[in-house]
Image 1 (cartoon, rainbow, N blue to C red):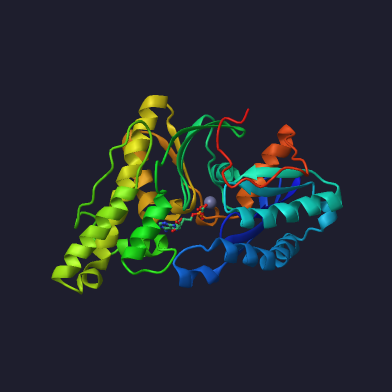
Image 2: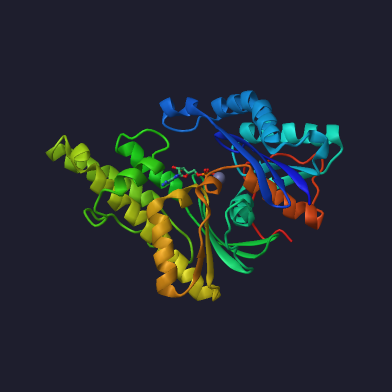
Length: 341
Ligand code: KG4
Ligand code: ZN
């Protein structure tokens, strides 16, 4: 029954969680409001906020779990990908703690964490995907299609060639004058709008890759042209514009997922990453699964956006396979999600 402390500090959330045998005892997240006024994450400010948050967040996670540090069997932290300064805070903290306690250090790939979040257990009963399965990971920094053969074998079969899906949400939201992060706000307005009101292009990219930068440009020119005719266009049509943007992003994702299922013949599809919190995408994936006769897995909202429970569960798998990190392991902003065996 390994007791693992997970630490996540790759971007703008300082998080810590304690899991026992894959079961969540605590899951604490401190957001960073400091970025809102800048319309995006400022790396320098993120690192400083992590420095301030890390001790109280870890302390709270241990307290809520009712666990003393000497009971821990391992410390998992996010090695990358992410912002270097932000990663350094979590990795230095985890290394120091592992050294002081003499317990295994587990260096986790953040993107693998998002996928393995499907194996987190809590008081709610959930079906878990069986290997092999496909995972569509959609976050603020990444959009990936991954073939998962087991908890330690990941094959990247498609990814974005420019913006990530979350980035597309956030950039389009910014064009509409919405604050950062705009993804959840587009979701909220889209619920009240018509997804077919306006048409935006779906990029044609070879293979199983994605592209979202054209959408941002199309939205930019669309808003410029419409506001030239009517300065109130955005406020008068906000729900319809958001619904149409969201519809385009979802269609772009589903097109590639469909192709990936055809190519691999795998009939289990998992969704992961911050954008999997999007209500339209969650509904669309479920409908898609029913139509195509495939089983779909959608994480609970708490494990979609960045959290440390996903880092702890990934660390748990690594402890099981004996992948213990060295003290000289360095944080890696561009850590690759590939076939690691
Ligand atoms: O996985 P995540 O928390 O952080 C990264 O690893 O990037 O993902 C954050 C991204 C942001 O772009 C945010 O706007 C998006 O997820 N997001 C959403 C929603 N909730 C979060 N996008 C659309 N609809 C949502 N409900
Ligand atoms: Zn993430």
